Length: 297
Ligand SMILES: NC(=O)C1=CN([C@@H]2O[C@H](COP(=O)(O)OP(=O)(O)OC[C@H]3O[C@@H](n4cnc5c(N)ncnc54)[C@H](OP(=O)(O)O)[C@@H]3O)[C@@H](O)[C@H]2O)C=CC1
Ligand SMILES: C=C(O[C@H]1[C@H](O)[C@@H](CO)O[C@H](OP(=O)(O)OP(=O)(O)OC[C@H]2O[C@@H](n3ccc(=O)[nH]c3=O)[C@H](O)[C@@H]2O)[C@@H]1NC(C)=O)C(=O)O
Image (cartoon, rainbow, N blue to C red; front, top):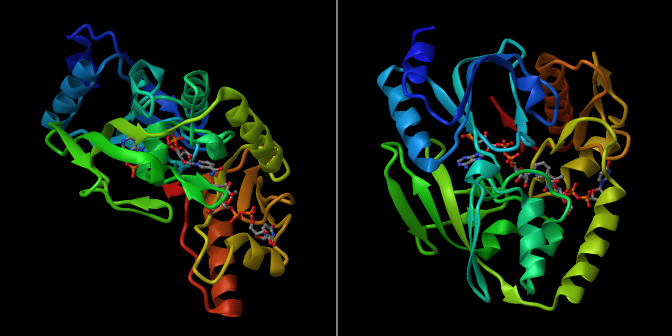
């Protein structure tokens, strides 16, 4: 592979692997091989790697913790870049502001916030994934969303130049942001509140308890569909008797009808088939067009 030789000439500290099974890096445990799997060591190296990939016409995708992705069984041509804790530093700005690099896990961010006697993100405790993935899709729970706390976002645009998007340029809606899909979130400026540690810990305990009631015991990617304006997707899917509906090793969870689980060696094809059947049946019964919340690669 020519590109492999080219990248290796640079002696990057970033990890560059060949033919990696995406099933090892997605919470669904689904996905075939990608030609190149890259874990950047620093932003400087990431930008250089992105430039090299672009010059060589290598299609490139970005992921965080892989908790919201359905990757294809046949794999992906090109490169997947995984942003992890190497690019996940947290910078304390003042008593109510934190600057967080996109590879930071939500759990780590919440621990840091609590230690600094700050609060606001308690509702996100237990949500897997990175802050980058969360901001891109305006992740949320319990009627709150991360976008409510974002003061600004530092991004790399399509030319890999750094830009700052302030509150006025940002637009967060239910499970969506207006950050272009081909941009990379580098860093997020969050506005939090001053809050005693004990108060945050009490709230966190509550949210963990609530979440655990519906947590599937098998690999999944959380909610499969966005909630339509008519009500929770899970309610409509459940009403049609889909709990336990199975194709291959993909199955609608008994715990929550808007979650599909991998009970063994499920394929992306099986999950997509269930998604399409549910979409058709919900449309037929209720006239509602369900839209996937998971990102289908
Ligand atoms: N509420 C819940 O219980 C759950 C919520 N989620 C949410 O989904 C989020 C997924 O996070 P994570 O697992 O890290 O993400 P993923 O690795 O699942 O990536 C999902 C998509 O986010 C985009 N993305 C991720 N990181 C970046 C970045 N730094 N810059 C630009 N785009 C990025 C990519 O979109 P593209 O391919 O379009 O470029 C990617 O395909 C979590 O933060 C979580 O909040 C997930 C599961 C359950
Ligand atoms: C899991 C995710 O996020 C979740 C988040 O954890 C929870 C907690 O607040 O709220 C959303 O789920 P949700 O709307 O299904 O919330 P739930 O409280 O579980 O369900 C809402 C209602 O749907 C009904 N319901 C749900 C599931 C089911 O099988 N049957 C059913 O009838 C119940 O009446 C329930 O009261 C997010 N999902 C979306 C698509 O917005 C995710 O994004 O991956």
